Image 1 (cartoon, rainbow, N blue to C red):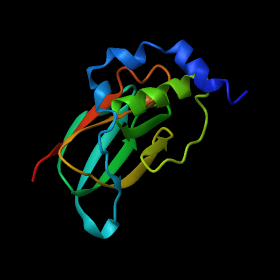
Image 2: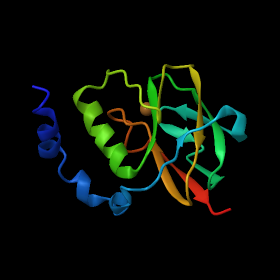
Image 3: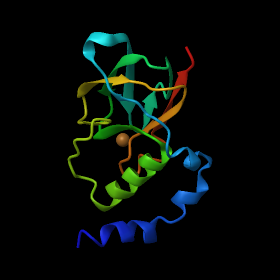
Image 4: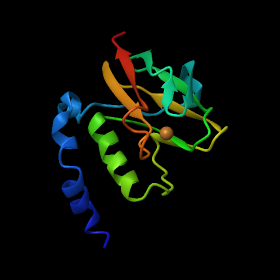
Length: 150
Ligand SMILES: [Cu+2]
């Protein structure tokens, strides 16, 4: 059964791969988990039902940032950092199994009222996307991290 799922995604969501202008940025370097001792700033984001506040943040290339995410809504939310292609792929997976617990370094899953932190080191200049990939949230609950040149 598990071998069939990737095929199902292709069949169910074929247009997702071709409609976004960002799709060619699939190889964007989103950065890596950072060292807490190198944090240069803290950025707070609040999740409501269903958007991120703020939805756009700016950092500098190579910077290590503490992202503090608070779920201020009444529903479970996630924050996933990635390329738009990665986010769309995750959203497709969530439509099949929305309640899975995931443990990727670039993902936070938050219950209502919960707050979590992610220490993240950004790479080169560019734009990194983030979103809540849960069904019914993904289209609106998105944001951008502008990574500026130093
Ligand atoms: Cu959400």
